[in-house]
Length: 254
Image (cartoon, rainbow, N blue to C red; front, side, top):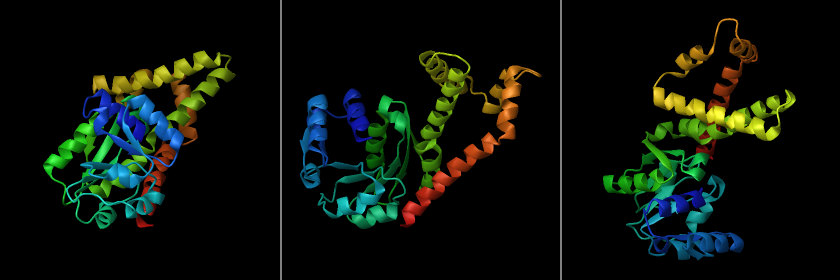
């Protein structure tokens, strides 16, 4: 996700490569980032955070506290965390004198097609939120949400791409079982998902309306939908989102 942000920020000209610094525990990773994006790199987190105006914490929630305990930042520095399940209260405790913002981007940010939910701490100003908005719009869309909904957002859009990818895997495998070449099956499945998403966005019709348009009485689609209904696929998908959200809530309590 950090690399996706670096690429998006530079491409959208939110900041120049010289204004960006990154740290990582893997020297090879730092070498790659420096060579690819011409940014500044450092082996230590503190060197990266020194004099930074905006610090983006692109780390796993399990190591966030350890990473932050080693950092000394300017009181004016804006702290932005993408760590799932880490609440604003905990972030504010880690950085008591700083404005903090909690965000939840998702995997399609890798290709500039992500969506990021943003929730601001009490110290964060409109100017701070404008900076965050500009950064994350470089990799997709941005929505503002109340912090109490961030765990739900994590389950829906944060984990959601994995559920879509699993569905595409299954569609491709089914195509292969029916005799379609894997490359062709992948193209058919991926383009079908992409086209369906674009149709939802462009027509403004509800998923139910569009589903009913495709489903003819006694037709092929209805036969397939009956299998999904018998297997309770819709309920399973809802449960997957809810369980992912619950896990995010558990992480916030740990």
